[in-house]
Amino acid sequence: MLTRLLKAKLHHAVVTQTNPEYHGSITIDRNLLKESGLLPYEAVLVADCENGNRFETYIIPGEPGSGIIGINGAAARLTEKGNRVIIMAFVLCDQGEIEKHQATVLVLNRDNTVKEKVFHHASE
Image (cartoon, rainbow, N blue to C red; front, side):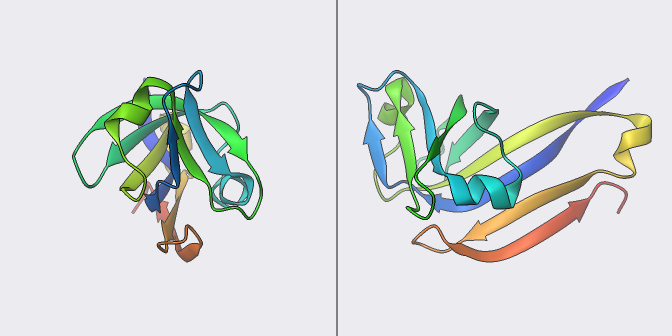
């Protein structure tokens, strides 16, 4: 049996741009991807802290150091520039992997720089 666990989370990322004309996805600063363990083209769940909207999309890497969090395509209509969002990726683990699993959470400042890095262990 597999259990779905949090892999990585960007907490309170601030949307820097929206583009409903782009063909979909969320653009995330490549430095944030590297530090969190998120991957280009990985599926993510996005929750808007300001309006409660939730949507699933995939990651496109953005310019390193830019702080970009860009919501593209139809999802751009579910949020606004300046809104805080939570970006989450999940992983499936079997029973033997659960004890070793560690989720990475980056708590971000308003400029999308890392304020705090937290690790959550599934065995706790």
